[in-house]
Image (tube, rainbow over all chains, first blue to last red; front, side, top):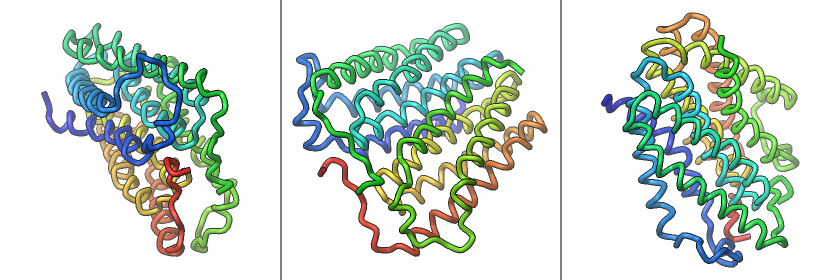
Length: 159
Length: 159
């Protein structure tokens, strides 16, 4: 594996990671009604860190293979939508908007997983935890949206 | 050119475009001190739309070429940091934080431009307007940060 490539893909994940650091759930998230199967708070950074390492590994492996076009396009797309989700949910408290972001995010992760499996078995495997986690995250987003109908969005331009 | 690939890269740009739509500059941006060379408001969506089309075209061309590893890794990285910038600047009003985001964004765009030129002349050319615009945007970010020392960040978790 080319470690510089791994580093660039990990850097890209850093953009999504930064949203988690600067858009903190805080007290507001504590007060939300959540389904009983909500993962405990400590699991989120652990899951994401594991996923970032795995998908950067997958990216670095697939980037050097011929026929990687769809795998690379979907990798880029998941990175962008993964960076978008947190600001919409925690920055704007737009739960329905965040759920809409989950659609292209989920599809991009699914597309990348399938494309990876066609190129490199390990790279495909490395995307499976992400596939599972983004499915849970989408279900959690939908559930929290349903359970908290009274949440008011933040409108930064009005502050 | 493979139009499905073009579409996936354009979808990825849609994440960054969405930040511009939901984190509106609004009245707050109007009140900021800005340097005399600040581009007029109408130029921002026009510039970004042109850039999204050009870099999606470049992405689709380079994705099918052998030896595209660095070009694709940098493409993904610019997509993620481009999506990160707006929420930090307009969502949190963290001007120094946004300027820090400009560093990996600028480097990713530069890396992608260089890697593209080594693979495909048109794909390299297609990144030049982005290179110019992100340089202007970084300078504007730095200038606005200097000119408006009293701006208070928004802390969504405290609202």
